[in-house]
Length: 119
Image 1: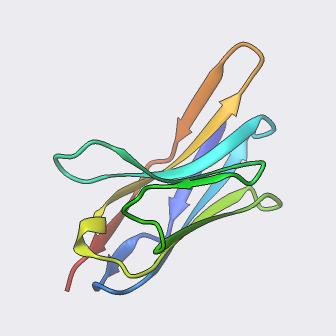
Image 2: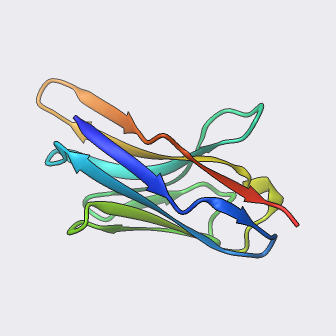
């Protein structure tokens, strides 16, 4: 089992910045990809950014150039640096981890952290 704990959310003004953190614990040896998703009221959960253990990254078009995902393998932590925030970035942000096992692929989710961008 893998447990994920997000932190760093909060209220920020437009144009401001936040850094989200997600610490993984438990049986993390087979975790391959970690990423961030977000879900706003009335909208589907969408991928924000993801980063594989091999260093391959992907970003949603809406956040390219503003958000940066990084990973500290020693701390088993993934970060999301969010700059130039807009009200459209307001959502609950969820940390995600994908574990590739011999007979299955498993996905884990954190509890979510609220990010609100408002003046």
